[in-house]
Image 1 (cartoon, rainbow, N blue to C red):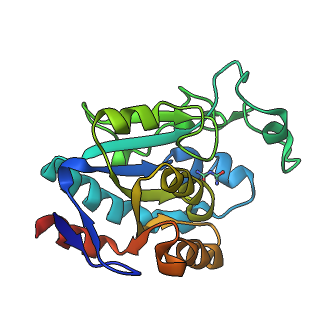
Image 2 (cartoon, rainbow, N blue to C red):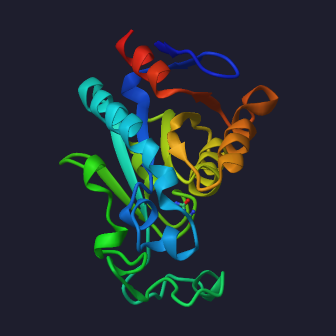
Image 3 (cartoon, rainbow, N blue to C red):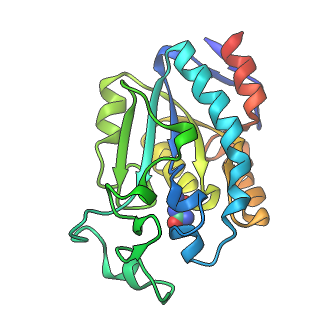
Length: 221
Ligand code: C5J
C-alpha cells in the first residue's frame, strides 16, 4: 500500500487497484466559444488545472494506474438530451446548436473533445456521459469492477458540478475517492473552496482532498 498526505487524514491505496479519473477536461469547458462560455462563464479560470493534470497523467502512466477520461456530451440525434437540460438557462444558443467549435456539447464535435494537452493515449478509457455524474448511463462502474479498482484519484472540471456528482456516485458504490484540489477547477472561486470542503468534511463523508504535489509524492514513495 502507498500513502498520500491528504485531508481529513492520510489516503492509503494500492496502485494496481487505483484509477485516475479525469473529469470533462474538454474544449467546451476550457476554451472560448464552448458550452462553459455559452453559459456566461470566464473559461480562463479553469486553465490553471491543466498543468497539475498533465503531471498527474504522466505519473499515472508511469506507475501503471488505470486512466479514465470522461467527456460530457450528447449523441448527434440529441435523443439522449433531456428537454430540461436543452432549455435550462434560456440561452440564445443551447446544447446541439452550432458554435465555433462545432455543435455545442455534441459527441464527435471538436468542442466536445478533450483538450490537446491531456489527450488520451492508446489503452486509456474514454467515457462519454450524457449527465453530470460519470456513472449515470455509462459503463464506468462495469469497467472499474472488471479491473478490480477500489480507489479513485479524481480531477477535472467543474468541482461543484461533474466532479462532485461523480464522487458522490462513486462513494455510494463503495469506491474510495481522493479529489486533487489544484487539478480541479470551478468558474466560481467560492464554489471551488466549498466544493472541496464538502468532500472532506465530517471525517471525509465523500472522500479525501490533497494537492497534486502530495499525490505525486505518494505515487513515488
Ligand atoms: C458542467 C461539468 N458544469 N463538467 N459540467 O455543466 O461540470
